[in-house]
Structures are given as structure tokens and as C-alpha cells.
Length: 100
Image (cartoon, rainbow, N blue to C red; front, side):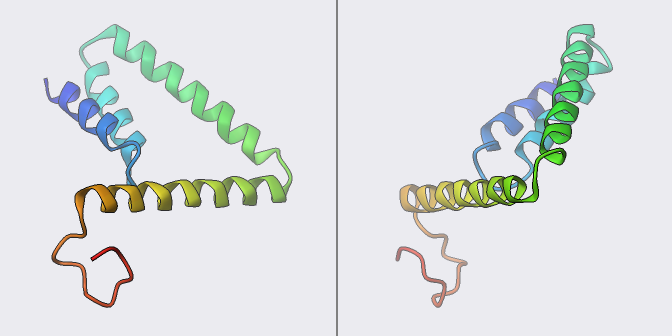
């Protein structure tokens, strides 16, 4: 039950800044202690992460920089949309240039 809750929380937080995918993988680790399907899914996930990191590592520096910039732009866009939809929290200082 705990593993399923951790995976569900991780899936909900994937588009937000933070450890969304890491949380999903942690939930799979918990589920893999009891279920073989979760163990297979975790092994598949590990293989895909190794493939991705190997692919990125073998690219020229400009491709890695471009991927970093695109990822940062996506995260900034998600943060702005979330702040626009939910409003700026009251604990954010007034000097921060966000929607008020």
C-alpha cells in the first residue's frame, strides 16, 4: 500500500520541479520487495535510464547544454503555469517578481 501511494504521489509531481521521477522509482523499489511485476518494471526503468544517460553522455557538449536549457525552460514554464493557476503563496516575499 505504501509503495502504491509513493508511486501515485511521484506521478502527480512529475511535471512540477522536484524529484517526481525519483519518487516514482522509490515507490517501485518498495513495491518490488513484494511483487515480481514491480521488480520487472524497475529493471526496465533502470535499463532505460542507463540508455538515456549513455546517449546524452555520448553527445557533443552543445547538445547537452541545449538539453539542459530546454529542461530548465520547461520547468520554469510549469512553475509559472502552476503559480498562475493556483496563485502565489502568501509566504513568498513581495519583492519576488511573480503574479500578485
